[in-house]
Length: 491
Ligand code: HEM
Image (spheres, rainbow, N blue to C red):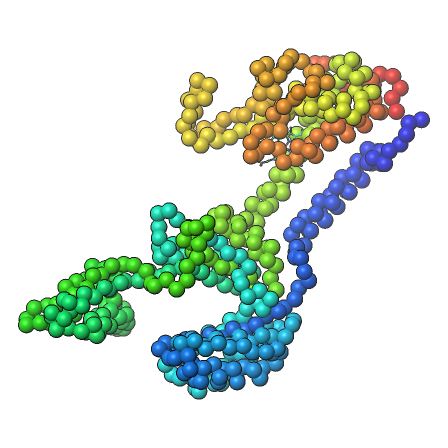
């Protein structure tokens, strides 16, 4: 009477085994797509930030005319814990801290409505207040991405980030806003030469007035006929440094004074107020602020995929999961089949395996994988190259015969023999490099369990007709049909 193992149930009832596996796959799939991973339970701890710009106003004026009325208006809304404010020259900031778990969207709507009510009280020259929701538990962005360049300066990096990456990352799900830290905007710098200005009897104010007169954006309008409508455009703004140089500042005794006569014009950057560095190099940072209540780990994954230039599409995820499933089917049965085909013809190896201990079994599995490696992969040649005396062109297909590499006599002693206790066995059955088999550990275990179970139940067997054995062809090679006769009693 042989001892029965738990796994016997699945060998006797293959349908049960398939169903159990399908259940695991379905549960795994569901978990993969729906389970969020977050360290702490979801908490809404938010504040509403109101910033108002009043160019030219002193801190005192900002406090009296902006900060105080705004504070008064917003402190009365529901869910407010406390209100903080700062008044600087030209800028008022009011932060409304909300109570824990108060709905920030509702607070945002209420604050906006209240601000509308007091809008008439605020000075007309001040810009309309900007309102945004911020996480109160995180006064800093959750992610900072640094950008440095050996070729481009900070203004160029800032300009590039503001045009391309900042809007792109800001639209990712779960991202509230993306800010540029340590950046410097491009600016046209006009260095006035006071001596030349004085010689022409001009003042810096004349230059400023000329700049304002000549550099503005104008929408001319449109003209309509019976059948056609034409939009009129006027190029009233200056863009390049040369255009600024040619700008007429004044007329002196019938001669025209251009800006280049009294000043040096160059494209530079705004004055630096803040400077950011990375490893001693000047850098520009993108600060990424996730939405209140969003999962930061998910946002991190999306950011990484976006930054790599390859956001994961649904198709990509589906393809990867499908590959993991199908890559483990014909490969493993080919390896198991080839091992049994070998054992059916070699009684000495059957005897050795029937009484094999743990180590002997491990060595045998590796040797079967080496000697009967089932997989031959293909690659598309990336660049023209000469290989083994052959010219390969970009775009050609090229086979990687791992099974042949496993029988290389320069690497393996008695390469063409199956030596079940081969101690040194660095074979390439699972490939080499970054695409090396993802399922190699599972594959080894499957091969080992299959051989152990087979040898326990059918220790002695032989081929009935060697010529009746059929093999699959193509990239995965293994026996499809192996007619055998069981010798002795078995289980
Ligand atoms: C004896 C069994 C197996 C053999 C001989 C084998 C062999 C290989 C080989 C040679 C490669 C490399 C292909 C290349 O270089 O492009 C590979 C890749 C792969 N294998 Fe296996 N495999 C086996 C079983 C499995 C199993 C059971 C799974 C999954 C559960 C699996 C999943 C994969 C995946 C996902 C890849 C692609 C990896 C990548 O491209 O990054 N394999 N396999």
